[in-house]
Image (cartoon, rainbow over all chains, first blue to last red; front, side, top):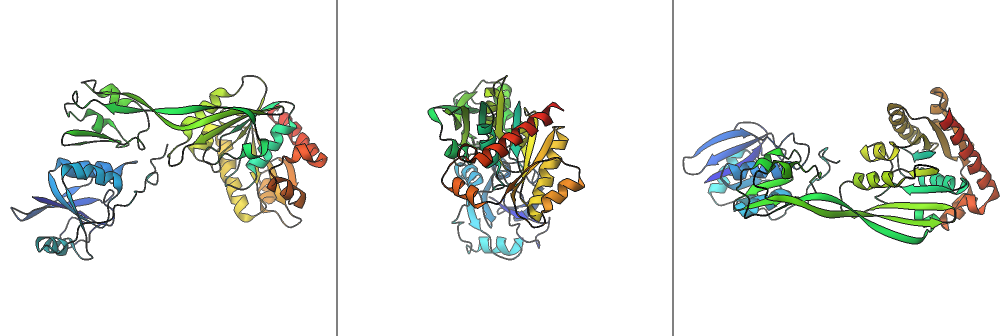
Length: 124
Length: 278
């Protein structure tokens, strides 16, 4: 299964990006092959609906779980029907979070925030 | 003649000036474009009101026709659509009603659906016809309501357009059909800064304009200084006055209640009319 983490830089020592939808990159960790690749987040610069576009990207990449500090309601609505589980990121690097995930130490993301609609320059 | 009343921030007295101007004119249409919090009607108390719905068009999907080709998802620059296994999701609040997804759907699985975003209330208050735009709570943009209000402006006769605060798109829509712009400014540094914002906007739109200095005190007025430095016409100075405060707090129109203010606003109307003709 693939686990996605929003990251500031394309390295495993990078910190988890506080934004789910507008993170510059995602780390995609494959739990079977134990390899990690990084991909650009096409939604980072979008006018509006970044969370939706980012969630769509993860759905398209067949992601099964996301480790993130937070997630907006629109993004969560896209992730849910694709059965993508959300886990709360902890302070530390991407590797720390992946280790904790594998050890079952991460908690499910309990809180879905109402989003920042209209604050991304997307207002009419 | 159509006069738009605007300011860079809320609370400077746009509605106060608009309502009083409309009442000082012989017979005018007052248009409340501050759709997020329209309050001109609190003073004008229109009678015989009728309310009509303002809608925007959003897509609706017939899932049995959708093949998941993603044309719509890829087309939408606002990301109002998402395709998840077995389902096309549509986010109405994000949709900008461009209709592109419907045009690009090869299966004709998408069709138009109307969604109400607010209302327009029409009524009369003495000689004044009152049009009030009202955006539903939680909606992102009032621009479609402003566009409908602009279509309701009479071809002939006088209209006063009470704009939303600021200088964003919604204000641009509100002034686009105006023959003259009245900028209302407060006597503070912050007021002068906000005046500069709308000053830049009306110049960009090549609209004739002038300034009303509101809440004037005997002290130094940074907004007045800004007008002097930029050779801007000062149309009227309204004092910071207890009588006005009293009338306003009781929801009364100064130009209807007080001879002094009736004359002040008639004078302002004359200045505006002359300014628009130049």
